[in-house]
Structures are given as C-alpha cells and as structure tokens.
Image (tube, rainbow, N blue to C red; front, side, top):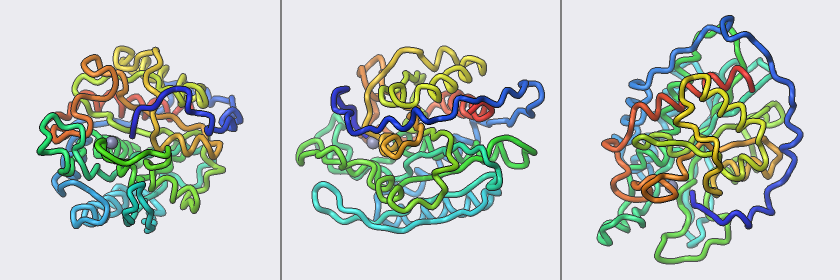
Amino acid sequence: MVMMSAVSLAACGSRSSETKASVAEVPAAEVAAAEFNADSAYAYVARQTEFGPRVPGTDAWRACGGWLADKLKELGVENVTTQRGEAATCDGTRIPLMNISGQIRPDAGRRVLLLAHWDSRPWADHDGDAANRRKPIDGANDGASGVGVILEIARALKGQADGPGVDILFVDGEDYGPHADGGGDDGDCWALGTQYWLAEPTLDLGAVRAAILLDMVGGRDARFHKEYFSNLYAREVVDKVWKAAKAAGYGDRFDSAVGGAITDDHVYFLREGVAAIDIIESANPTTGSFNPTWHTLDDNISNIDRATLGAVGETVIRALRDI
Ligand SMILES: [Zn+2]
C-alpha cells in the first residue's frame, strides 16, 4: 500500500452511506467473550514468514497459499475457496494470483468481512541499504500480521454459539506496486488481487454490512489513527471499531485523530459501495507515516509486537458484536 495525498480520492463512491444504521444492542454480559490469544496470533504470523517472502509465483507463495486454505478448514471455517487468477503489474509483469476466502456461520444474515493481503512485497525498495532494495521482504508486518490476526479471530470464534456471520478474505497481489526507483503509478498498481476478486467475488457482497481490512497491525507499540478514506466514507464503522477499542481497554492504541490517506485494498471495496475501513499504522511518530520497517528487510518476525496483535484482535472481536 502507499500513502497518497488526500485530494486524489474522487474515484471513491459514496454508496457506503447506505450502510444500515441499526445496531444490535446485545448487552455485553450476554455475549460469551471469544478469547483472542496474542501468542497464537504471533505464531500464525511467524509460520507465514517461515515460508519465506510470499511473492506471487514463487514456491514460498504456493506453499503458504496451500497452508492458509488448509488452516482455515482446520479452524472450522466453511466454504473455503481458492480463486486463481492472473494480473498485469504496472511494469508489465504478469503475476499469478490466489485469493482465499471462507465463511464462519455462513447462514447468518448479518455479516462482516475481515480481509488482509497475504502476499509480500518483491522489493525492499525503502531499505536503508541500497544493496537490499531489489530483495523481497518477509512482510511480517506488511501482510502476515493482518492474516495472523484474522486466523486467530477465526480460531477464537470457533464454537461460539451465536454472533455475526464472518466472511474471511485473504487477498493476493496487494504489494506489487511500482518500485520506488522507477515506474509510474496510475493509481491502480496496488491491490491487484482485490481488483481481480471484486470482478468475480467468491462471497456475497450484498450480505456484507461492513468490511474491515487489517494491514500492518503488528508494529512495535503501534498506534492506529483513523485512516482518511475509511473515516470519510465508512465513518459509522470506524466509530464502532474505535469505540470497541476503548471498551476493550485499548483507547491508547486507537487514536481518535485522522491519520494518512492510504491506497489499499479497502479503497476498491468502497468503490463497490461496501462500508470498508482500513486498520493500519499510518502515523508512526518516527516516520510520520508507516512503521519504520515498511518495505525494508527489517519487516521480519523480530519486529512483530505481540501486544499490538492482541490489541487489534481483541478490538475487532469486540466490534463484531456491534456492527
Ligand atoms: Zn506494502
């Protein structure tokens, strides 16, 4: 994903305002708390990085894609589907894609889509050492963290008697946007897997009340500001998630200020009229934008913060009650 200026957002539709305002007011005490385990989420992140960089078309990517589908099934997720496709990157490379989806409580009418990209960037083009800038990254934070949190949410929700239906989507080809040293960006160079999937969705988007994208949710001491497009077009969902964070004791992690405007998978869902938000670290105090490890070889498991994974996972599970 990339940070963009806030003015170039005209393409985003406004149909997200159709999001229903009704909220199921279930007293918290009556809802069995699903236990999110940060250590388990961390293990899922680590497992993905052990395959190596999940760059589309590589053996590591193929193996991890198979593992993700198997893991979802093992966790009791239903209707697990691997959609295979192909896309052209902005430098003309053709890459294969695997978008992996599944459902928890497929019969529930009230549904929330949780998504994350599972591919990792082919180039560490923001690495401090120029010699590393053509090497692929582990993507522990940028990719694996969101997937790891969603896998753990699926594990935690397993066996819960009721609650919302949850759709899960791991999208491919998010991070093949132009190398920092070359190539223009026409604005649609990122989120290739999402663009492909939305043309032929494997889930019923009409049943989705809200979509929550988790991207870079494992940074050390990360705090989350309201992403610009999310806040503009799906504010109701943003507000519910930030309220849930506060209720879960993570008000310090979820800042009420608006952060960066990010070209990420959620933007394409917004264009389709889905109330989609991005939980992403976009106002890091050191960089003023993304985590310092962003698109560097330092984006590896040693820089993943279990407490951050826990704060995000617990918050999302709590928010699922209200959306
Ligand atoms: Zn990235």
